[in-house]
Image 1 (cartoon, rainbow, N blue to C red):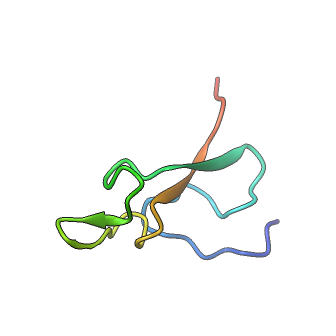
Image 2 (spheres, helix red, strand yellow):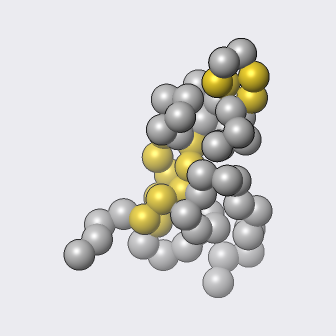
Length: 55
């Protein structure tokens, strides 16, 4: 299990979870800001952790 379990609201899993990877935040397009404020989805990081691949 990954050591870092800090999740942002837009994360699907903790960083380092097998089968996941970083992607640009869909709400701020990677800028970290939305409507002049810190993006609430990515917590201002501009990226989210999402599942990759799939069936």
